[in-house]
Every structure is written in structure tokens, then in C-alpha cells.
Amino acid sequence: EHGPAGLRAYLQESGTAALSGSSVANEAVRLYQIAGELEKAREQYQRFLTAWRDAEPEMEPVVAQGRQALAGIPPLKRE
Image (cartoon, rainbow, N blue to C red):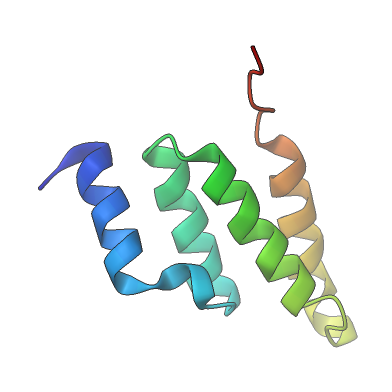
């Protein structure tokens, strides 16, 4: 299956939400954003930032990039 539905199915089946490695987390977020799953993208960034909150100093640029990317996800439209 292709398109957003296929991406959602892939992400659910692969269990990437449980992974916290920086490249895997970034790819999962990118796929969620493509699929229009902004809340799931936001959750994935939050998991990443929680897992890496005590990162070694040399990893701080990666963590800072994650914070910046999280801030760039548009807020949900509440009705």
C-alpha cells in the first residue's frame, strides 16, 4: 500500500515509535510528517528528547536539532 495509509501501516508494523536512536527517530518523524500524522511526529520527538536528555556534550547539537524540529511542528487545530 502506498501513500499516507501505507506509511502509517509501515510505522505501526515496524514499531519504530519505540526506538530512540537519533537517525531512526528522525526517519520515523519524517515519515509521520509525510503521512500527516503530526501528533505522532510530536510524540516521537518527545520520546527522542526524553531518551537523550542526558546526552554526552558532543551529542548536544543533535538534541538541539530535535528540540528545534519539535518546535517547528505546527500545532493541532482544535475545534
